[in-house]
Amino acid sequence: MDFGLTTEQQMVADTVRGFVEKELYPHEAEVERTGQVPPGLGEEIKRKVIDLGFYAPNLPVEVGGGGLDHLTFTLLERELGRASMALGVFWGRPSGILMGCEGEQRERYLLPAARGERFDALAMTEPGAGSDVRGMQCFARRDGGDWVVNGAKHFISHADLADFVIVFVATGEEETARGPKKRITCFLVDRGAPGFEIRPGYDSVSHRGYHNCILTFDDCRLPDAQILGEVHRGFELANEWLYATRITVAAGCVGRARRVFDLALTHAAERRQFGQPIGRFQGVSFKLADMITEIDAADWLTLAAAWRLDQGLPADREIASAKVYASEMLARVTDEAIQIHGGMGLMSDLPLARFWRDARVERIWDGTSEIQRHIIGRGLLRPLGA
Figure 1 (cartoon, rainbow, N blue to C red):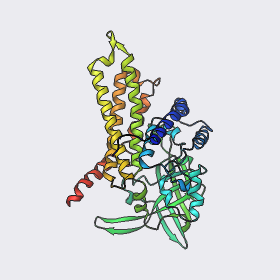
Figure 2: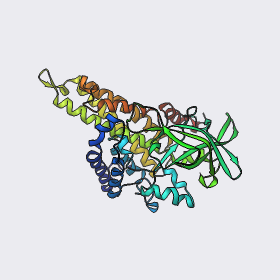
Figure 3: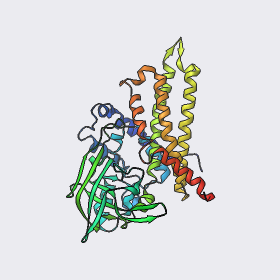
Figure 4: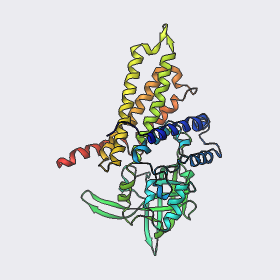
């Protein structure tokens, strides 16, 4: 592995960071105060990203995307992670699973998503089925030449912005060594489809302005043309395309941790107590030393996992290690940054309390820390037949 960045990779990182600092930071306080992105601002951000030539950077060039490799895209996500997710979501990164579109689906969903004309959301989680994807209750039954869907999804990120949703639904059942498991099929469902409703979700303490939604299906009728991939093969489709989203979470955590660290370091150098900067006291300087060591470790774990993907090497365990370590690192770093700032760290005058709250969800979504440790343990034991 080459530990140096190419000129292109450094340019990507510098460009994204400059955009984030200039175009997103100034709006964060208002989003935090109101819980909403101001009307029109999201479209303005999207337009500027398109003008910059960076929209859909994760999709191949042949479909209108930026064609970035996994490592370069991870650098982009790391810098984007410094900003409010409510604002950063408008830097469009369509779900890679849309590359499974075929025929007319490419014209209706994939290509418009790559151009920024249509926005997607991904729906798997249910009130009774989170980590247990194959235990989902939202079900589609055959009725003539169509599928009729009933059930609900929740915690669906930015579905309020979506023109269509990529939905995983149970379409049957099969016997396995561990008992019956649901067969899963992936559907493309347009906003406004009869029987399909996108409703406001829960009031989350993490990432204000970046909304989760509840989806309900009441005899929602979908033709075969809305199936993404093959019938009953949605679980395999998800495993093929969605594993890299955990790298995105890890990268975002690293970026946010570096922003938090910069605030703590500056404060430690400028704040004086007992006639000297507080950074000179070991109680503070040792905290800073531990913080930067953990941030660097998480950064390299994340970049190494992305590098493995680019080399075509197995990376499930490495991705899980990056996700669990980076997300837990962010929690420790934000907590220590508040400790270094003292009482002011908890005041709304500074963004630290926001970072502290935002950090909590990272250990839950896109696979909990417990799920990541399960993946890591499984990857270690399976080769030994255990």
